[in-house]
Image 1 (cartoon, each protein chain N blue to C red):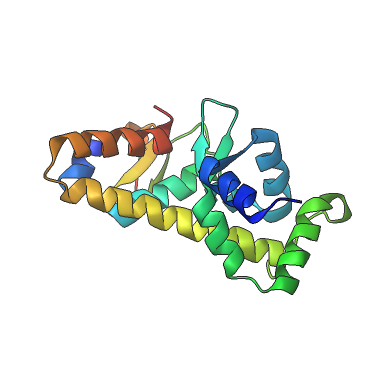
Image 2: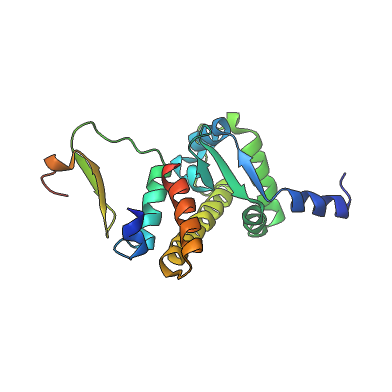
Length: 135
Length: 52
């Protein structure tokens, strides 16, 4: 079991988690293709998806303990289901993550349009291009 | 395309809709096709578009 300090250190070091492409495809088979919107897709690395840790924490906070337990069980035992009901706890978690990611992307585009700083605009353009086209 | 985004010819919300659509790995036909995102359209073989 982790101590509080160890847990906080884990959070500090892991700014994001990356879901391998195969796992993303497995989840897409259960929850539909919108699963691929839960984070930034790395199109050059087999379709892996990177999710900011802060998003996961916020999405989990939106569930009560019972729903979180259900979501974990649903995600751990996909073999029992051919497709997951949209009302399932895991589906709610995925919806929350997808909504957050897309809002953050749109905010980045808004910032790209508003920025008067050429260096910031260049950086944002690169990030947006990466997320859209992988280049 | 991102030049047009920068000067707001393409709307941020519409570009986000494009990202969400691309991420779903949509299947598109080999023949002419197009999809309207509001402030822009994407498609294949645009010279053959009859209506989009």
